[in-house]
Image (cartoon, rainbow, N blue to C red; front, top):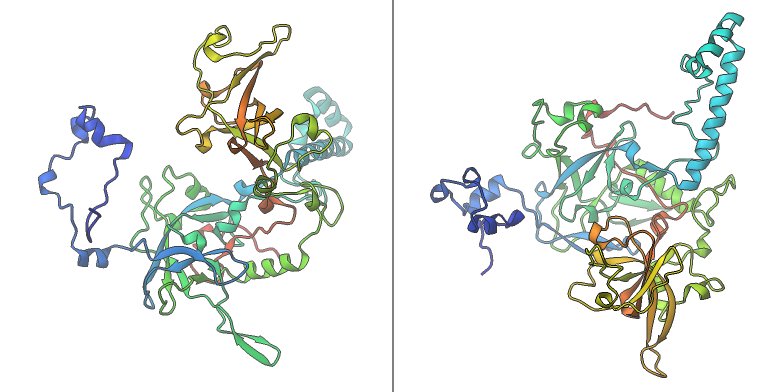
Amino acid sequence: DGIGEGGEVWVDRWWWHQRLALGLVNDKDIINDNDNYNYKKDIRQLRQQGTCLDNLQPGRSSHPDHGRGAMASRFLPKGSIVAPVPVLPVPRDELRYLRKKEWKEVEKWRKKKRKEMELKTITNLDDQTKAESREQGVGKKVETIEEDDGDNTEAALPPGMKWRQQLLLNYCFGHVNSSVLLFPYGLFVNFINHAPSEVVRNLGDEKYDAPVANVGLRWSDRWVERDTVSGKDPRTMSPEELFSRPNPAGLVLEYVALRDIRPNEEILFDYGSLWANAWNEHVRHHPASSSDDNGNGYGSPPLNDYTPAYIMEEVATNLRTAEEQLTYPYPDNVFTACFYRYSDGNDDHYDDDKKFNAQSINTNSKTKTRAIPWKMSRGLFDMTNLRPCKVIDREPIQTGGKKMAYTAIIQNRPGLSPEEQIPKGVKHIVSGIPREAFRFVDRPYTSDVHLEGAFRQNIGLESLGVFPTAWLDLKSEE
């Protein structure tokens, strides 16, 4: 029948009502005064005390390069709250990472630096201290070094190498002088694109109108909550206190209309001058290859070796076998996966051939091998059933037909439940898999948003005056 104005939204969380009907809910969990509880609020009270969550809707951005954007779903008068923006504090350092190859270089470089520091320490010691250091171990003395030419071997990187940044950084609010990032998770707030605050841009003697920001950002005095343990306002805490809270919730910003906003008009926010400068620099100097300016080769494959998984999905109507890929390999950034449910859960799975329609078992090898037919079942095409596989054969479904069925080695992936994991030492081969059950998948950190030179910059709040001073724990980079 729908939910009327002021009606409460109910969700059967953790099947509470089902458990209540079965007598599985403790009496203390049941609200005893249901008869006195008002399930419908006065709409005028809601408008005064509540915040609308449906002022935004996704749509196509007016800027050709922005893709999707957030649009106003109704008229929003100047000064009104466009959307609440709950945020989670994230340590800036947690968004840094290096690839495996780079970590090996780092460990090699740090090991060399430690040895240099040890030699430097022994060289500067007198004879008696040298004898003591030999008895106690050089490592004991390294801890006492006070002057190391400014190198912190646990944090520094080799020359020419820089920390990589997670994609999440692009969606976070931040301040250049703070280790605190704020990740917004309100409804459609991450769809809001950038526009400058200036009303008119100049182009020589000609002036033209350009999209400008129509919302600002401020703290929500209504929804910010004090810490449940200390009773402090989280905005007055140090970054260390902020990150150690048992419950990270309670921080809420809100977008506010800077002028009247029409229905279906795009919502735009000024990401700050640091973000704009970083973007302009990125556009001017976007690299054409994977190597950095120093040519040290850190990073992902060259751009001309990269093909997105969705493109491979469109062009590869027939899949290559593992043998064919030795001559005609797929791009390094993709692999094949297929929808398959390995719901066994039986300890004697490998002793009951008939039960699993085994076609062959290689008993002369340490690796047991079986081939069973692929079966369609309800819910199979759920993404939780997508797992890596290696195609080893294909044949027409019908004689002379173009549609193929494939035989593949099914593999495990991280996160599978124990009953869905293929036991170690078993080569699990499945035959008769249709092309529709396969997907090309981007390898981790190889999609286009992770290519060398991909843009990374948080949304800046430096000029708004909303970033708490208690969180400004980093020095300015002169």
